[in-house]
Image (cartoon, rainbow, N blue to C red; front, side, top):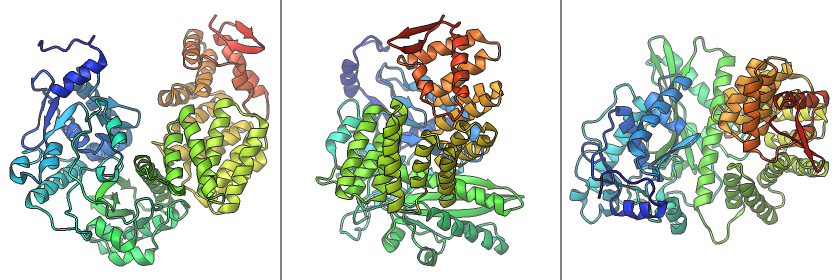
Length: 631
């Protein structure tokens, strides 16, 4: 067989060939990766090696970009860390993606190693450790390897090595009588033992074979289907200055207060969680004692004249970290600065726990799903942002409401699902009124949940009732200041009411609160609208670009970009962008724009004029549907 794999081979044949001669990764002992042709693949960058190792030990081979950035570039600013990760991934793709079926898959917010294409010795060893513990677990994990200055990675590496030593020595029985094992955690912290569905697991690997299970622990949570709950421990003051105790404890107390406004996430009371102090105890023990699924810890450090706050979110069922963050605190510590810090942390924790619960529900297949199972599975599908998944989500939320018609969470999610359908299909006034009724039911079910008020505000906005909409959105923010989408929708409301100068502040607040949100394309798009309405076309084009990069099919941002280019003397680029819009949305027409609920319709006319400039004033009409085409 030649060393080069012929790219023209059919994908199925490649899969079969790769299963016979797979990639092989050695993590026990010195790092080494072998390609399907038997040759060693050289990865020269230490951080590239670290990325491969961390992905290989994730239970589905997947990590979020922000998690990887924090582990390897936690001391850098976010933009610098993002750029560094992109460069490392580009270099890795050149090394690893040597077959038409790629080993390394890079998506917008996460990165995955296809475990169906690679044998990882540390994972294989775990599967056979009981049979021959000494020989199967020989060699130090990443022998002789470290990265000076990458504190997050060094902590992960120590955790892996410690887990390996525990596995070699054998573990005492757990309270349930089962032997404990150590798990290679996934990006969401959900272990392989929590994924009982073999069919679903097999489907996750393209070759149809389930990868060897990672080192695993039994689920210590009595009822994995129970609603999630969070305990916040008092943050540890490691500055060496007792005068800073107030700061460490004050931040953790503020977090408990703000997190309690997330109505879907019960937070253990301070009087219970603060009894434990900030000692380095196994998170699983805290989980058993407090009845919490998730545990938040924090450490305050001082380096010369700068303060750093490190927080980590753990899954108490596995004891492993879901998310960690290192944040610089500016001096002096003003009340406003600390309020902003706490609001951003709440948004981050909301997103991380939300995703973990969605993944749990997706991988659990109970014979009789309860309301929580149905809601979390529905949320997972809804966040895929496709019509097919939205239809599945709607059915799941409907089933949840059949079981509990007064469930505030089911009502909120059903309203959110209807919101998506109305926007994507430019729904009728009757459908918007139905959305408003659902949102009002959610508010009655739980008046303190800001999300119900937000959905009601969106419905009023689409019905061209800006005063009512604004009041509801402001109430949503008052109930939960960390609700990033409520800030973004308030900015949208100002745009539709013809007040773009007032839209920018809440939109920027939304970006600051949730910079990695799945819906961030919407926020960038509304910033583009605001700047365009103000005649600031260069800024409008920049924000529209940011939106389209994150969601190429978002036609509204494309329209703003076309207008910006057309009105700044760049008709050629405007025409090219119009072509991209028509390729992404072949059914795009003026009806998309005339549906937009601007109070003053001249703004819609202006957007249509910009498209006409880009298409050299040529409009093709078919069945009364005005469609823009290139001239």
